[in-house]
Structure formats: C-alpha cells, structure tokens
Length: 548
View 1 (cartoon, rainbow, N blue to C red):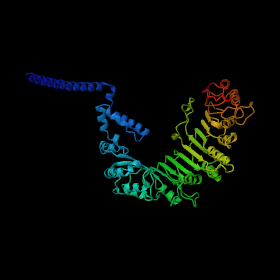
View 2: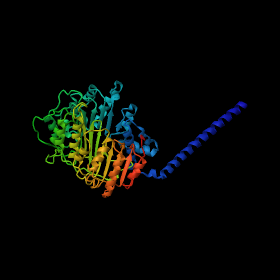
View 3: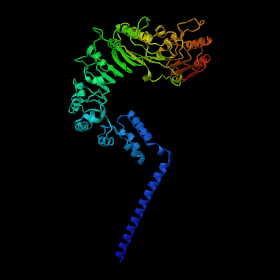
View 4: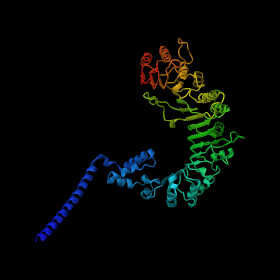
C-alpha cells in the first residue's frame, strides 16, 4: 500500500516538474521576444544595414592595424542576432583568410561566399604539415584571390607553390607582395605564367634580382623592388634594361627602388622616360646611381619624393649640388620642386634628413609639443647617410657641405615654418652655414630648434649682427619660437644671450608672441621670468638638472 502510494507521489512529482519546465520554456520565449522587441526600440537598432556593415569594417580595420593576426573584431557578430545576421551576410568582412589560425580557414572561406580573397602567408604556413592544405586551398580558390602577401618562405617552396597552379589561373590577382620572401631567378616567369591575359596585376613588390624584361611589369601602377646590397648580384641590370622597363610602365603611380645594382657611371645618354601618372617615387642607393635615375625620368610637378642618397666620397657632394641646383642660381635643377612653406632639418646618427611641405597652417604649431604635418603629406623627404669612415679627413665638413647644398636648393624663399633638430654636434653646421643655406627668410612665422643645434641656430637668428643698435635682419616676421633640450650653460650658451636677443627684437618692433621651453637644462625660473619681459608669452616645463 505504501509502495503504491509512493509510486503515485513520484509520478505526480514528475508531472509537476514537466509542467514547470513547460512554463519556464514558454516564459523564456516570451522574455526573449519582449527583450528583442525592447532592443528594437533603442536608437542603435535603427542603424541601416549599410551603415552597420561599414562600422563592422572599421572595427575589423582597427584590429588588423594593431595586429594582422588579431581576430578579436569577430566579437561584433556576437552582440545580438541582428548584428550577427548582418555580419554573416556581408562576404567582404570575411575575405582576409587567416592562415595563422588554420581552424578558421574553412569557416572564413565559407562566409566569404564568392567574394574576392586576400591572403597573407608567413613561414609557419610553409611547414610540412600545413603546406598540403595551403596548396589545396590555392588549387580551389586561386581564381578569386585578389591579394597575396608572403613572408619568410624558402625559394624552393615558393616556386613549388606557384609552379603547380594552372596557367592563367590567377584571374583576379591585383596585388602581389613578395618583398619579405626570397625569390629565385625564375620568379617573374612563374608570375607571368599565372596571370590572365590581359593581366589585372597592379601592385608588385619583390626582393631582387628580377627580370627587367618581363611582361609582368607593363600593367603595374605600383612597383617596388628591394635589392640586398650586402649580397653579390649575379646578373645586375644595365641602364638600357632599366630605362626600357620604366618606359613599359606608362600607368605607374608609385615607384620604390632600393639599392638597384646599376653601374655608378652612364656610358651614354638615354632618352628621358616620362612617367605621366607618377604620384610618388622612393629611391634609395648611392648618390651617383640615384642621380642617374632622376636625370632620365620626367615627373609631374605634383610627384612626392622620398630620396636616400648615400654619401660615400667627397665627390658625391657635387652630385647632390648638381641634382638639386645647389647655391649657384645659374645651375638648372634636375627636378622642378614645388614651393616649400614648411621645412624640417634633422641631423642624427651620421645622417641628415630634410623634409619639406608645400603648405603651413598655424594649427600645426602646437606649443604643448611642437608638431609638423605628417611626413606622408610632404613633397620631399631627403636622407643623406654619411658612409665615410670616421677617420676620413674633413668628414664633418663634407657632410655639412652636402647638407648645405641640399638645403639651399630647396625652394623656400617664402618659408613660414622651420625646424632644425640635431642629436649630435656636426662641426660644419654652424651660424655661417645655416645663414648660407636658409638666408634671411623674411616671412618665417614659426621656428623650432632642438638639441645641440641651438647655439648655431641662435647665431643664425641673430644674423651675426653684434651691433644691437641695428635692427635684426633675419626672421623679421618671426612670432613663435620653440626650444627643446637646449643647454643654457656658461661656456656653452647662457640664457642671457637669448634674453638680449629677445629684448633687441622687441625694441625694433619684432616682438615674439610666444617662446616655449621643453626639457631644457640649466634654465632657471628667473631666466624664464626675465625673458617674459620681452615676449608676450613664455611657457616652460621647469625641467632643470640643477647642476650649478
């Protein structure tokens, strides 16, 4: 009797639990529906699909900028069902196939549907246990791959990877970057075999040597080749091969050539190659070779230049002078430069860097920290590494002469902002050489000077005029001066020298609006206060090593 009663009670309990579970399920569904309805009422839920997709792409771009192997952006697909649905239905979000995460490759490929793909490979992808999967992927999807970037593979593996693919199968390939992967002598042949007719390849970045006669070059808008100047080149190009290759790239917009092993001397003259579409050119190499290149290429006036001319002997200075026009007004420069409004000269680690901009805005002058426009916006970035041995006689004078020639040739008759930065003392960079290089600069509004160059710069600013009864001749329009890491020490440069200069300028109606000191040593509070009597505003971070 008791056992039967227990069974009835047990059955009743199970029924009750079942009823409760059903009620929980019903209420859970109602809560889900109500929560969904509530979420649909908030403003973020009303963002159009197109805008939300664009936001997702920005999130992805941010993560990829921080690390190309970071898949953290995928969290946007986990926020809610609507967001997940929009993300999964946007194939363009899934075109970067993450071979560094092999488990994700099939799913990403599936989500990309039929969209064009972008592939980045590193040395781990070429390990034996992954190489088969990589080859299989390329076999299936090579026709819709738009971009391939490869680093760290061995020559034989890279050749095998391309060699087994069907001819003309890379129908969508527009960007191929093998700059960080070694290539064999037949790399261009393998690339040419893969490309469709006509080729859609627009960007090609390689590590030399290359075949300069290849048809691959003819369709390019962006071409970069890096040679390793520490390794011997078995078949260096000749100037006829080089200039003929450039002539076959009429659509070229960006050209980057690093240490191309051309002969230092031209045996004969060649016709000028006119690159009518060129927007940017980056040349690096010895001064004679870079000079030879520039003398035989014609550019649009809007072209941006990034040039590195190695100074390895005294005669290279004459090449710099001839290339940029030098201080001789009768010398016609090889390049017609835009008019510079802002210029920065930096001397560090045995190199000089000159950066010039064609514009100036007072908004770029931030005295909470001197700020020039982004270097990418400049029309000229010139580097002059000094390869002369430290024991070379007159080494500093040769380097200073190269700096002087390059500076004086840059067209800045109406310069508005000037920055001189020196991390080391260079004997030839002094008051006289700066005066010869830059001249009076009657419209200069803002100046910045950093490091050991301060003493020479102030001498230049004073124009060498020790007679304080006469008006200053240099920088008559100067209103802002920023000094960083200046050393105001007796025997080096006393604060009193600058104070006298500021007082002198004020007396002749050339009062500065603002002088800013950052990280300056041996500068006292009294010095800053005294200078404030001759300047409308003085700011100072009060950094002082208090050595005296």
